[in-house]
Length: 426
Image (cartoon, rainbow, N blue to C red):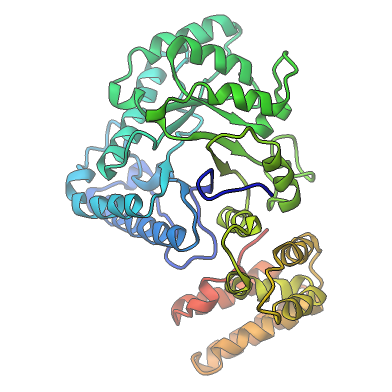
């Protein structure tokens, strides 16, 4: 795998799995009283700080911040001055991001449509973009921290829809324009369309490989030629070129992201990339877990110690799915002088692909239950035993059995379990 710490950064989007106190909260408009919103925003900023520290510790230098970090921030009926109220907290997070050389971004959702036929939708889209730019400005991060946007709908006339996008782009504040980047999508606007829009507006282009597979340009250039052309739209002030990378979930419809990144396939993709600075945002169901995998798989500065740290997070999940793999990895990690990352992740990926077998999952659950032996009350211990027995008798699901133990892990603040992958659903 050709990867260098000064060339590629690999990151993930929004949600961090298997990390204590990393969850975001939100609320509906009808429940958005100021005090309630303040509490939610405080929780979300604390969670973001936790995530940024985790990313720094795991050499993840690329991260997409969820638009929900400030719930309902662009809604006209919500006027809470969140940046003023949480100025010091936001400043602290921004300083943490900058100190650890983490490039952050944001990506408004499907309702932020700049080329809509409806003026009210366009106005709402502009307000939403203002919020995203303002949040990044409040963090104090530089112009390389971007806002990703899709072009929008076709509305029966792609040429006119593109013209509307260009005209409405001109209405945007400079604070938005300096951060905005545009992406090809899987239905309406292929990479050639987006590059043509970029030529009119001067907006940097994000190439998305899976969207390109589903919605290719008429010009049959290879994806790497399109990446090269997209890279030419990035100026020095924009930071390194950014692309989105994902793999198709073969069990679902076209465009569905895979459970995890196949490291071997990703390695082959990297080897064919243009020789230029590129940041790679992974879009995958297991989020940070795949990001850590792809970073460790690079082997650029890692050792068996790093695999042991990651194994501590995986081991009860693997024991439940693939006991033979569990013992294979234990043997693999006995030799501290070798960095057997490819062997390690071949076993991990095999475990993820395995169907759950009841007796194996019960065995893993009984190991996990041991963490409560000295902490839980007799009633709670019986609850764990009962949940395992109900799972054995097909009265509850594996998810329900694990939930019983997760609730108790949270109650007793058992970090080893809360920071593991045991409770994650692939």
